[in-house]
Structures are given as structure tokens and as C-alpha cells.
Length: 521
Image 1 (cartoon, rainbow, N blue to C red):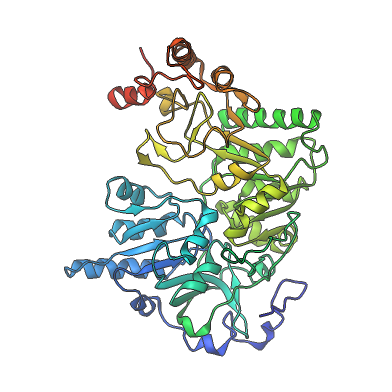
Image 2 (image 1 turned 90 degrees about the horizontal axis):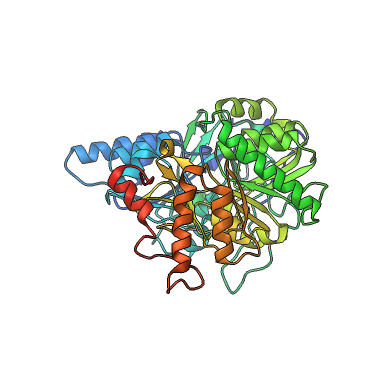
């Protein structure tokens, strides 16, 4: 199928009428959200659109939660297996979690009610790399996908779907699902048309071909999604704003972390390991630390930067607007209320500097490796040898998930993990003797950064890494305890290549569980 997009970004067939649904085939399927959810049955596997706070269905999910609640009230069980791009809007996740409507969740979540259900064993959760989702679903790891619920901004006369503010796994959901429910959200500006690049050339082994992206700006697909109209069982019209991603101004700790990162960039430029004219494409996770780094870039010497990441946050819009970043590629937006207003008010400008792709491309290891991404992601904790835990509190309780951090950390040119040196008012140290859960091994972690400093682990043996991590990244109150552990571990007869005292390796975590603090009085 071919899209017809004029220079303004609007569909050239817009004059044909029909509002956002310009295909008569799809107009004949318009119904209410309450009628649409009748196509979803207990024990179905349901794949929905949405990535971060953008593009989550606005009407179907609340209607589904109401239906589940009613069925449960009548004494019957009703749960679904829920597949998404990553996290979805907090309200959406909460509605389904509060009625115990989710039996299995994949691949990422960030909502407290769902988190409690997972950690209490009431909800199964599969935490995987985001770049793996499409292939695993195609291969049937999660069984048959019964229903896909996908938000779009419009439907063309020929039946093409105009994506909304995220793409995520929507291409895969539309391809594999038995039944499709579309939400057509007229709140999304028609001028968003043309910002998307949907690639249909992926394949399963042994039929894969190279992904032809050699620069961030490259477009290799089409601006619309495809769907077999015979699979579409309902179309629901909405006009609803995306949920905002909460954002607070960077605090002193975030600004200190950002300053260390920016100083490191200049050091790498001086050594010839980063180009002075634009560094390398940047990737950053979601949160205040990432936004602080982006703000710091605006005050630095570099202009014309590029970004190849999962999400675009407020800080990225600011950099684009001021010329610090000339082009950014992602799979979704993750904006605050002010960021949403900024984007929607100036969409014609931002469409020239942003491309949104399916997450199987935005997170594709081949592309990440080829472009030489500088990967900057958050962590919960790191140990003295550089292993990183980004998902589990005290080793057992899930926080959110690995998301795409592993896609970028293992395959990027530079792999950096950032965190404050303490949490819970100093009761938790983010630098510990041994992490009780490993998401990123020492082999995938090159740089650790806290507000205390930056530890460059490249070229260092474990014994040397431990001293650098403690000296540069640990909070002063925990430094002596960590050095004492290392000294005794190295003197142990069983010290080996990576010295540990196995009886004490998790003592920081045990102490916290017993006393509420890792600090030894």
C-alpha cells in the first residue's frame, strides 16, 4: 500500500470527507467501546497499542475493565493475557490491575497496582528485551494473539492506518492478531502524518536481510500501518488526550550526574574516541537524570547532534527547538503536559526533525551496533565489579523491567549506567559488594556514574574495577564499608579472579531487610 502525503503532512485524500475514517469499509464497522469489548473473551491474549504514556487505547481499556468487573461481580472469572509495546498509560494499567483482570503481563510495566500483583504472585510477568518481543510473538511463545486493540490517528480511503503518537509493537499486533479493534483518536493532529516510518522488511531466520539504516535520518519504510480489513471487527471513535509522563525539574543530584557525563564526553573527544562535530547518536532512558543530561548538552559546545532512542522526552524537544539536536529517532513520545502542548502546537516543525519507528527497529541490535550509539540508562544498583541490577529491589521484587536498556547497552559503542549513589534517604547504597539480581553483566557495562563521580571501567581487570567504582561512585558514608569488604575478599585464600566473600556478598541487602538500612552502625 502507498500513502499519499502532501507537504503539509495531511493526507491528500482528506478532501474526500468522512472525518478521520475515510474508508467506507471501516466506517461501516464503527461502534461503541462497550459493544467492541464483547469481542474480547475470558482467557484471551490481548495485544494493545501504547509505549510509555503515548498511544494507549482511551476507550476500549476502560470499557474492558468495566466488563471484567461486571463478570466478576456475577461470580465468574475473567482474565486476559496482556501484551504491549512497553509500559502504557498509568491509568490504563491500573484499571485492569485493580479488577485482577490480567493473568499474564509482557514485556514491561511501571504501575504500582500491577507491580504489587506481580510481586504477590497474583499476576505472571515476563520481563524481556524490547527488541525480542516481535520475534517471540511471531514464534508463538505466548500462544495465539486473539485480539489486537490499536489506537490510530486516522484511516485513509484505501484502508491504511495513520499511527498516533507511538508505534511500539503495533505493526506486529496488526499482523498476528485474529481480530482487530481500532480506536481512531481525532485528538492526534492530522499533521502527525509523515512522522512515522513503518518498515515491513523484517523476517524470521533464515530469511532475514540487513536493516538498511546507516544514519539516524534514514527512512526505510512507509508512513502508515497495514491491516487486513477482514480482521477488523470494530472501530471506535475517540477524541482524547494522551496521558502525560510526569517530569520534575532536575535536582542537584541529577545535575551533578549530568555534569560528570558531559565532562566525560569532552574527555573522549580530546582522546579522539568521539567526533567533535556531533559526538555519536545518543540514547537515553526515561527520567529526570536523562533529562538533566539533555539539558546539559544544550549548554555545551556541541550542535547538530542526533539521537536514536526509544522515547522522545521534553528535553529532546527543547534541544531540537534550539538546534542542539538536528534529528531524533524513537518509537514513541513520552512527554509532560507542557511537552505535549509544545509538540502539538509546532507539529509542522517537529515533523521535520523526528521519526517514529516500530520498536523492533528502534531497538534493533544490528542498527544500534552500526550507528555507534552512546547508551545512557538508569539503574537501581551496581556492584563493585560493574554488574548492574536495573529491575529488582533487594533482588526479588520487580520494579519496572529491563525495557530496552539491554538492547542498547550490549550493542552500543558506549554503555553508561547512571544513578544517585544512595536511595531512601541514605538507607540504601546503589554501590554494593554483589548485586542480587543481574540484568547487565560486567561485560556490557563500560561506565558507571553517580553524583559522586564517574567510573570508566574499560580496560580494567576486576580487582582494579572494584577500587575505581568505590572511589568514584560510592557515597562517602558507604566507602569504608565497601573497601573493608574488598580488602578482606582479596586476602581470602579463595579470592580468585573476582574476589568475593560469599557469606557476606549480599550482607548489605540482608541488613536492609532486617534493619531498614544498609549502613552498618
